Length: 557
Image (cartoon, rainbow, N blue to C red; front, side, top):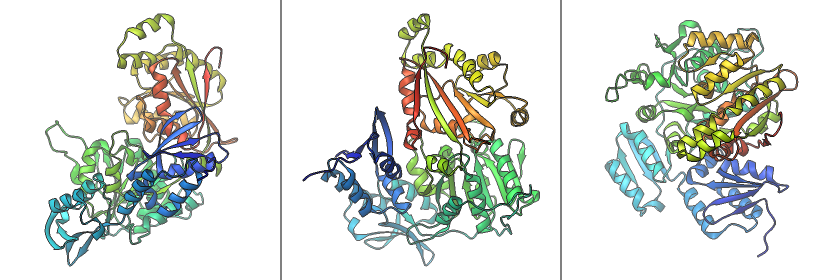
């Protein structure tokens, strides 16, 4: 058999090599983004990995087995290895074969007869079954609905949940056509599509799931439109007190809700109203490691029609456990990236719902929904005296020495001169490094220790232009509304976190006046462990079609 010189090479272990120099690489990358996860980049070769979860998410978004297999066969330099094809078919064959539904007020777990002799499945079915109806249908406890889905998904059997939802408490709310600030308002086409996919109830997809949109593309608006379309009480969970206030402002600006309809549940405020906005931190707060989570009752405080999980990639384990208990409430997850560094991606799929919509960042950029970001990795040399200390250090200490390379601060000064007319964020991992940077630059330093009131005051000064440079700790990874920031300089990061890199670049994506451009610089100490972690950190952005220009520092940047 003769194969074409395609853009990809599919291997028997379900890894896929993409030749980025191939003329069809851009089209191939977009396909692979929907089905796989990028693992590694070496020169022009990108290494992707197919998994059961990535395939199930692809099918949830409308892909089908025949088209996926045919595309791989047609575009792979070696065709599709039989072992790989068999595994793909086996995983996809399980999708839609295990179902939960109600029959005469009994929760039924049913599966296709083709799975009858699958030992792992049968073992789990008998674990959860209360009684049997026939060999493929079993009665299970309604309170186990989430745990059943979670455990079966982890074991390779995705559950289609057709058991439906409680109605929820009525709430008369509508979207405005003109915002309170006097601007004409309507959903953008991609926001309408994301909403439609969440609302659409077919045989397989039943009203809960995750929408993935770039930072700055209006994820909050999708959530607001979802609750307005239901007209039911809503619990909104988000990552920070700053984000809580952003949600409240957007709800008041774009819907008919009033101040009295919206409760803020964070810090000293404990308001529970038809629309209640809370942080993950307060839900997971407890007085000791053995104490109960004092605020988890918020999940059952009212009969919520929908729970919205903002920044769902940050969902902590205790919230997963509570979510398993409330599967009869509609759920919508919102995020810029579904990457989880903790291995809990299956739990998002089983407990929040499958990925229903995913907007490519570069596509959003081309539509001018977000700013065009230029990414640059600057390799900074290590002073010879420090190099000796580095060589003698252990692995973790090596990374910290490289991350806190004092030469980076010289580069920061040069970059600030280069972008003297731009609002700039300097972001890092280590407080000692950030304190030194703030002192050198005569700029405010914002960390988690700074009160919300003081933080908001400084943010307002930055937005007004009174402050041009901010130095930020890991709070920059969370929802920070700084639309005028055009430059971000990353001094250091959390090991190889792809999620963090995406969130930090996300701080720049709000559309800009004029050329609609922004610049992201990541400073990396040359010939150290930091270069390895930098490559890992960049993988998500590379997957989205971004390229990092590499500059090896020998002269002024």
